[in-house]
Length: 356
Image (cartoon, rainbow, N blue to C red; front, top):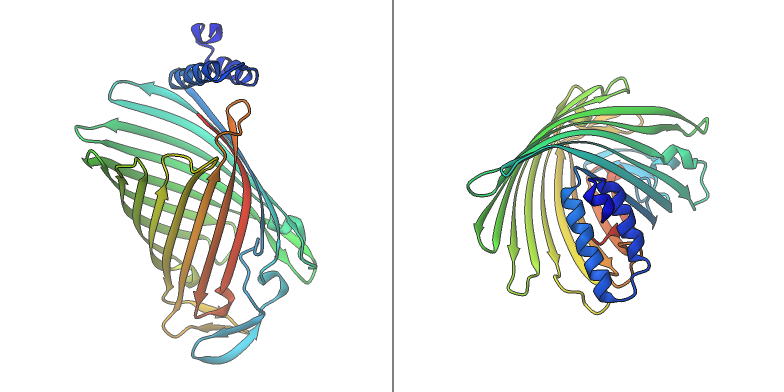
């Protein structure tokens, strides 16, 4: 703890994690973990590193088959190879760090930067190249939280640059494209009782695309959620979200709703910790033009319904330097009146996270 006493908290965290690898017994390990948590609270810098590797039957969000049709429309077409579901592996690396530049008994303010990149290795026999599905995102974030008489209110402003590839199947070449997102969000958390927490949120985004014909999209999202602490100390969460997007391109004008339910077990079940979630999402594009041989207005617009579920499995007894492995399983199914957006996705990925 000498480094912590000299206010070199990041160095202290490093040495405490090293100490965990040689802790002779559980008592020493528990004491080291408590010291690490204390240093983390004192440190104005906080950083996180994440990594996942997951196989998926649909790494590109492609359609289930190559027939392109619109319900109620007798004009059809064929979906190109790069628009079909492709199987492969996705590796994702994330890193973030933030600095707490203001703190008092009632408030705190932070500024941070984060990066997330993903790379794909396709296992299907296809002309689509691996680099066509790579993505990178860099975000700057400024946030402020303030304690109120009941609960907390927070506000944040973020700027994100997202880079991806626009793939041309005929030439097997990809072009680097991007969009920038500026987002302002407000959230309010307050206790309704000793066991029930209410969360309210609202955000406004402006998205600027580099591709001509899309350019600018404005998106508004509002949400509300309830979190219940059960007598067993398990937690149940229910969240409702509404969103609306407007833009110059009619295919980017939409409105949607989603309902999410989650359950987290407080105690491990045998050697594993568990949390699970399920969501239903509805999304409508009232003026959608279907990508048939020529753009065709869809009578009644495009309408999607998505069912998704996830399961997080942790292995708290398997640790090294305070890090534990985990397994995340995701499955989703989307049904749409425009067949290009019919898709089924299943993935299972290895994760690594800090246990404190």
